Amino acid sequence: MTPSRIEPATFRFVAQRRNHCATAVPSTRVLGRQQGNELADGLAKEAATNSDIKKCYDRIPKSAVKSEVSETSETKWQIKWDRTTKGVTTKLYFPKVADRLKLIISVISNLTMMVTGHGNIKSYLYKYKIIDSPMCTCKIGQQTTDHILYDCELVKQERDKLKAEILRSENWPVSNDTLINKYAEIFNKFVDSIPLEKL
Image (cartoon, rainbow, N blue to C red; front, top):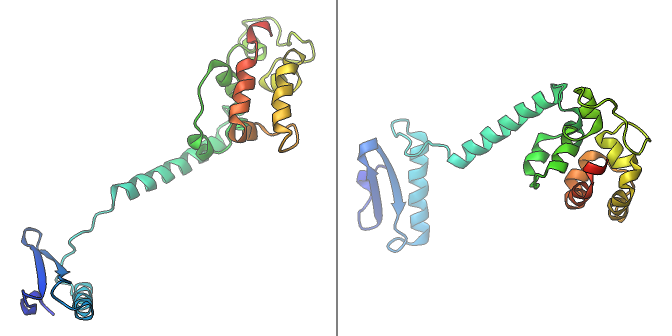
């Protein structure tokens, strides 16, 4: 069925001559539903089998391209993240790049310190020879982010609040990534309440 054999009264034909392609749109007001469907099916079949007809639309939607690029980037980033020996503390909180990208968190200095291990922590300051000892003021062990989170007696009261909230739904201790992904709000409160200047 070619466009020249379609009756103008029963079918509206839209031609895009500039691109040498055509789109046929049935006029259901004039044709009966059955007849219009048969005509549309016939035109669709002809368009699919006739190699002389060029495609009118062969572009990929921008959203599909963005989604594909995003997935590819995340996959490559995850591979690099898994292979790197840097960011050991951060990897404990964010083992999966995709989880971190989905997470909306308020960046405060104490949170940054906890998830990176960088900042006003004695083990970090000792590593760069800024102070003489990595020992925590509580004298139980070296002051690391894990020590502050799980062992330091100087933040016991703050940690007990965090533990009480988590113990409502699961056992303590939980993994670092569970803390940041599942209990972000409670964890942020804990981290924000740490009196680093006194540690």
